[in-house]
Length: 141
Image (cartoon, rainbow, N blue to C red; front, side, top):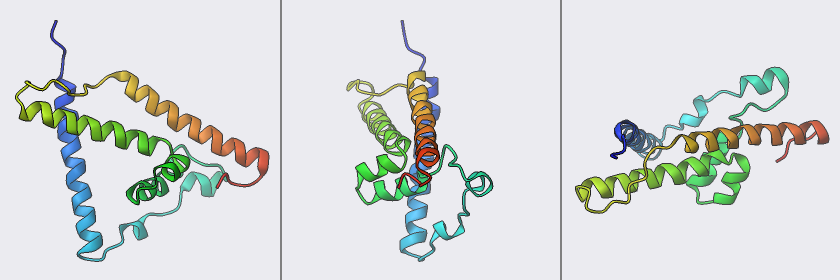
């Protein structure tokens, strides 16, 4: 029985769009000296409630990962290194299989479990940060 890989094609295209956006970001940052982070506002949920949203820490996690500090990235937001490893392997393995015309069958294929693990990481991160905040009165970092 042949697997349905139609989702893989769409994810592969989205992956290349993401890589293109990263290249544009790096060009803006290093060639034109435009700091896009200056345009990001504060977290609205945190401003209104004092609690952390499920995405809080994501930007810091991306910057830590970009600097090579995987542990710090994981502490800031565990979804970021998870998505980077999973997405990186997906893109690399799909590219190798496509270039080899299927002779090297190593491609990672979409499975719903990857989404559920990612959602669990996001939820657990928000619960942990807000739990520490409630119990301690201080942010976790």
